[in-house]
Image 1 (cartoon, rainbow, N blue to C red):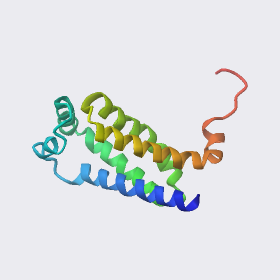
Image 2 (image 1 turned 30 degrees about the horizontal axis):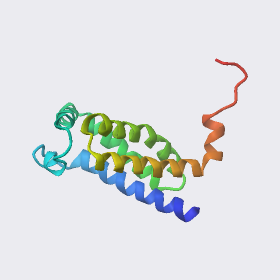
Image 3 (image 1 turned 30 degrees about the vertical axis):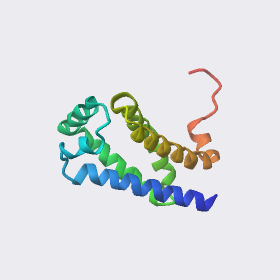
Image 4 (image 1 turned 45 degrees about the vertical axis):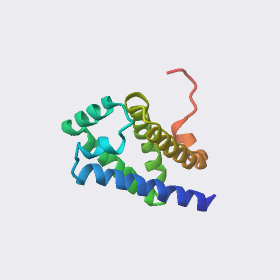
Length: 138
């Protein structure tokens, strides 16, 4: 299990560090991206251009890079993995609702599944923190 955890951590770290660096530091060329995924819904490219022009993709890229770096280190990978869940759900739902491009949807689903494997491997550690017992409803 330790080897699997290590491999998954490094795989996810590499993917998200690269994605974060790409969004933060590499120039966005709106003519190339639609050509790479020509079967995607054109609405997705309009949405992506809006995210790029508003600066929101820098926010996403920062957190992709941060989570990827947190996954590298044994002491912080659980935090990085927990932080990735909402980010990955947003990425997945963007592709489900906007691009409707099956390769993007499958890739995001696979990354979410791998992250959940990491999380549930440490279930005993985060369960008492996240799911604290309570005596009252509020």
